[in-house]
Length: 126
Ligand SMILES: C=C(N)C(=O)O
Image (cartoon, rainbow, N blue to C red; front, side):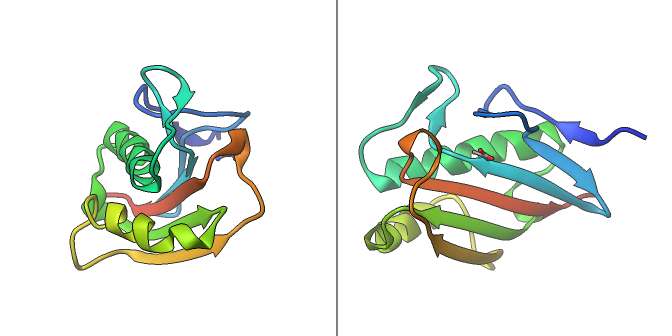
């Protein structure tokens, strides 16, 4: 049996993977870097703008699977510079409403394409 995968025009990939893969009642979304899918270019500028682009891309993938932000149960945030933590949180809070999903934020040495933030998530399926 092949994998049940989801891909969305409103998101990007930078390698050999799907935007999302379902299994065990969960939907696992690949990490999204802040690529604007309309241009294929990395969003530059504030960490807020980059964070919002990552989440917009992820929400496009959720939408392709018939899901939305309220279905998200776990989020992984990767930051190249942990000094961006507060600003990332500010942008993050514009895309999720309380009660928030569980989340882990990890500092990393570098990210694909020189991005400053990458976000992945897990959602429940219906
Ligand atoms: C950006 C990614 N999700 C990757 O390279 O795996």
